[in-house]
Amino acid sequence: MSSMERYNRIAVIYELMELPMELLAFSSWRRMLFGELAGHGAERVLEVGVGTGKNIPFYPRGMSFTALDVSERMLSRARKRAAGRAALVLGDAERLPFRSSSFDACISTYVFCSVDDPLAGLRELRRVLKRGGRAYFLEHMRSENRAVGLLQDLLNPAFRLLGPEINRPTKENIAMAGFGIVEERHLLGTVFRFIVAEKR
Ligand SMILES: C[S@@+](CC[C@H](N)C(=O)[O-])C[C@H]1O[C@@H](n2cnc3c(N)ncnc32)[C@H](O)[C@@H]1O
Image (tube, rainbow, N blue to C red; front, side):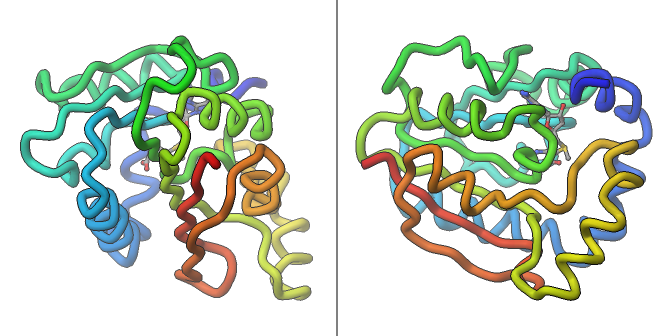
């Protein structure tokens, strides 16, 4: 089953499923990401995997942005939230429908755990960024702690039924896609991380 099918299937319960983590941590991490973004004065911003639009309230006032998702059912919820503030596009991160070097900054929150071919998606993200442009990631990935990593390997098949893979080497994937990693903050062990990467 593709990510599009998975997220179309769970769109109706997605926010309920995420609610505990949203209240405990995600919202404050989103605020941190958008604080960093605002500090860099980007004008053309792309969000990949916008989902139901949970980041939309965190965008600085007056900033317009483009946001894409592969799931029509997730995107239709984001459309309601955006209320005209964003250009919302149904599309695949692995084949972004944008010209090369057309954005100053890109954002993804909890997305590259789900994109079917994460390396292809990350390479596309890099392609559409202008040189010197930054990509801001909030992602969960395989822990550097051996025991936690093994537990993630064990639990991964169950999580995959719902949507994400929990044991991907996302930091390494970002570097492999050609980005330079500018900053990495560990938010919950080495499982949840904030990563800022640059197209050099
Ligand atoms: C876990 S949700 C995160 C949604 C949102 N970013 C958030 O922070 O709540 C992952 C999202 O990535 C989207 N996604 C998965 N694969 C994708 C792809 N190839 N292209 C675009 N979006 C994709 C899913 O449809 C889903 O909306």
